[in-house]
Length: 411
Image 1 (tube, rainbow, N blue to C red):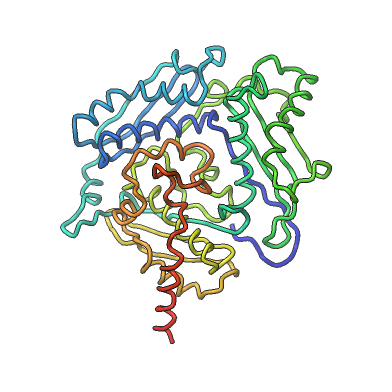
Image 2 (image 1 turned 90 degrees about the vertical axis):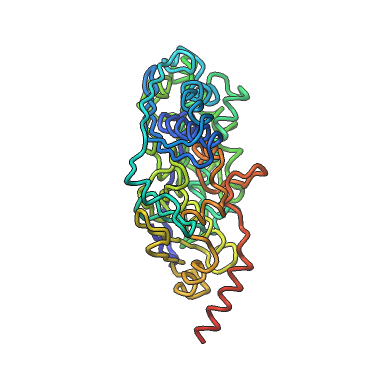
């Protein structure tokens, strides 16, 4: 989506879902399997899909592994699934979906040799893209992490719900939850929090109108208000909905079947900017759906952090089996201080854009993915153990140097 930066008020809304939401359960299981295989074999190729429903987790996909340790990791997939569900919080049989009693079915086979022909490294050391497709990255100045404010706040609310649940600050919360935040803008500037929606699964003790009214106050106190930005949140001038259906006892995979890859807008920018359509979880980094989207975010974030634009969207596109991107586009949506064509050329010179180049530069052949499958893939802090490398802002000086050369050549 492109926002008109002319002055004028409008509302924009984004949503997020908790680590216990059925689709996110599936995402985390798929990425936990991926991590287990990458830990055993950094060059494993994995495409893992998960379905979860009442009393059942089904793991399916295509895998290529290269050593005995990875084969053993394949044999341990059931244990990996159960450990993931335990970590999420599905340990109570009364929810009709729990880590110890659910059935785990596995149907995984080898990957297509036709795809491998295009992805295998050639004599020059490069491998082709694992699929065709287009990928987008986005950054803007609305938060310190250079993310759109509505999705940033939505993520923080479900993250806070998990903390409150785990610390028992509100007794009787369960893992499934959703959030939604509407921000009022003037031009490109957020001016206030307009509406907040939080739905959180709970035990039967919170059923009934009176109990729900009490729960709403507890959610406002312990979940909503601690995450609201000062200066933009006015408790007297905001609409708040908590469990607007009236109660939320039945939830998780018992209340709604979950599938990997069904929350691609939650995973990215909450509807700001475009989306290429490819999901992330369960895919090893030879799949540019994942790795090139991470790189596109890294590029956009560095461009904004460098002061070249207040808003930046980057598109990369690939053909299956071809290493170099088919196209590179930088769009600053009228906020740029540098010619966009010059920026696009500088991106090609500054950042490695082949699948192998991206994988090596962002260090993606490591078991770092399960954490990405909850609370968003972007706007996260890079960690000391090498997670979220695409969130680093470390190419500003090089971009400036390259751009100076591009400008010099143009003149």
